[in-house]
Image 1 (cartoon, rainbow over the protein chains, first blue to last red):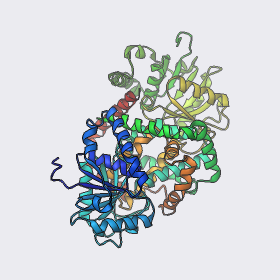
Image 2 (tube, rainbow over the protein chains, first blue to last red):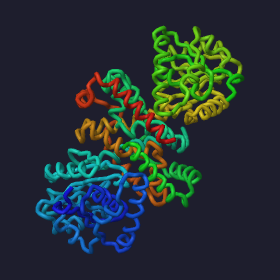
Image 3 (cartoon, chains in turn orange, brown):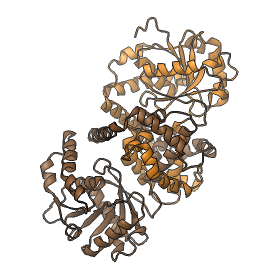
Image 4 (cartoon, chains in turn blue, red):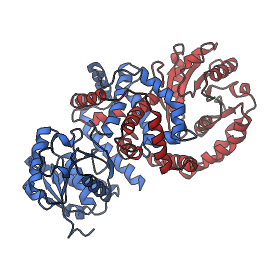
Length: 310
Length: 310
């Protein structure tokens, strides 16, 4: 990519999610201007980036750490980050008033053709971009944490988002090696967290009713369903699981699944008692003091998985 | 393992699931006696086993195909398979009357200390073992297909199953390299298919309402949630996703998930219209004539995943 003539990417908000985005774009050869209002976050960023990039290099997911770092510039103001950028990834705090205020500031400095994606995991773009002059060029671009290791990005337009903004965000994500998923319109939780929520609700319900331990429920995924789901989605999975494909599967097994739904507990209910018991089981398996090390282990496993796919 | 003095394992029902079980036990060094009432299945079995074992050898999941094959004996009667076996894995047709009849036959020839696990994916053991003399030694031992590539096994006791039967089945599964999960009591669909059903219901609902294509919904799993779930279950995943662990996560995000549940469509409803549209999308992505090749691809991916974990 000819980075000399390609406009830079702006990252606004450089916590854990923002830092992942910096790596995504810089890894793909793009110049990245970064702004965060917090001095503590700005100070922590270089260490965070170096550590993440060194780990990726160990897994041979990237070659040249220095070249990637050289594309990243930490700037002093939001204006300096946004001015002249072709794309702005906003990853500030998940508070609607903060998102609204930062979106308004981005809006002020937006280049004529630039577009903006928000990393929000739950707030629809319509809740914080309504008053922007360029609101047609704002959308949600929701990653999974950490974005540089889990490639999916949910693109969720507000009612006033220009379809061209969606198309260009999708194309950009494709180009930088992410996997964009496009929603036709807003829905609370988008797709990924709604799917996670449905599975979590059932897991909590089974645990609360005492059918199995958290460890055993976890193993049905990590040694069962999750193996296939790491390379095939739920629709492709069932498409292959009946001789005649997905419609054959729906005919054979739809009634069975409808039967489970009939005696499913009211959803969205994670009782305090169940949470307390689950916490006791989890802390027996993994003391609080080991949480951080286990997160590092998780990221190592993700990197090994990505490396093995190549 | 000293196979000379260890009693053999009996496999009753040698279709796709039974064939996987044969490999599980023979791979672990156990002698396996196999019976199936269908001549067509008996005739197909040697080819099926050789093909599966050769593929595993290519992925270096096993070393000595001939040694494994040498432990497998196809016998002419159920009596010959079951007599003297320490454990019987029953994998006959998923029809309650067939399970009841075959269980009664196994019961007749059961050695004094032998135990029986049924591969049923939906029928509780209480629906087909009630009249067995040795019903305390019958349980469900539900695998995922194919059992030799996806290790989880759900052990689900009937009300009359002896706890010792559960313990011994769990120990055996551990010994042969499977990953046993123990349920305290029966529940329709057990754990794995209830979790799958909850996620599928939400996926169908989102698709039916037109939020995204089957391909894009699939990608939120296969490039998103499924990556983590291939080595961590849902509880460990959320335990690591909040600074203070699982209780912190429940406090922060429980209300958000409860909000999704509030506007969730009635579950268990896969409309004919949605199934027809999903089928059209899937057949455009993968013609019917390629389903079989894609299943082989899926098994290759599972083998590569298992190999990369070693």
